[in-house]
Length: 408
Image (cartoon, rainbow, N blue to C red; front, top):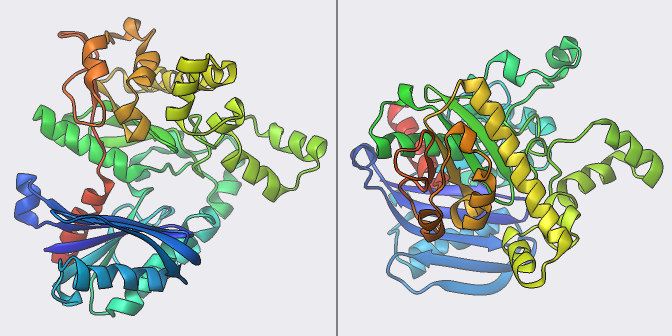
């Protein structure tokens, strides 16, 4: 079964074409046939498509909207890469949607009711859900109502969090009236890591007790106990929690009022500052890209680059300690995401000082890992091993699409 996985942003469209089936899922033999991205939709767009065994397709071309972007992808499948004989060769389409609110606790087949519920969640994710909906509507229009489409929610994995973990210390009436609570994000990634850890270690889901660290431009930590999320660092929006590329992470809420008064900013401007001008970028004054900050620190000894990295690592360490206390210990710590998978230097700084918990990093094993799946990067026999597992959200979306279609 060939499944098109779509991740639609406000001005971008990422995709993968994955061949999978219940038998492939069981054998872990799914195949990614193609992947690509269209950026800067609405003007002169940048295109990068890759197919298995073929030369990449790169270029710039006008792309008016998301419908035209999906048309371009389908035309490439049919006419250039020849991966599809017709659109009917697709078994279905899987969509990433950031926010499912309290309504959606698992992936679901798309219908009019589901579409309306996603629209109702727009106030909870005004930057993300409208963009996700653009991709959904474009594929609906182009592929027709007969094509099964499945929605996979970032928030769904965290639906198992208990009230003590997801409620804020505001009047309970605010939660009842406005759904002000912690939802968590990166759920598809954390869920994949829990799955990959249990298959690697050959343990049942109910025995998976790990701390998953998704560290990239966006960052989150997740406490996974008995295979389920019991707490996570992101909150009602993705700005809460760890320091990120351009997001501030945990912040005293009174800072918002101070910024408005002292800087003369309005609510929208403060929101932009906290989401797009803070984090690693805001502290360093240079960039939100960890790779560049590490280079600046190594080659130029840049003080603010060093400070940004130090704060980033300290925040991660703080959540590890909190979750170990909350879980009563863990079997492992797992790094994933662009930084987590590739930055050995950052992994080492985060693990430094965790010896009391049983973490004994093996510097040589850690240094060797760059992007690939690892065995433990800690010393043999240490009480709390650390692993690096590349995430694969698109694969999980494709598998959920197949399962949802077959279950009807």
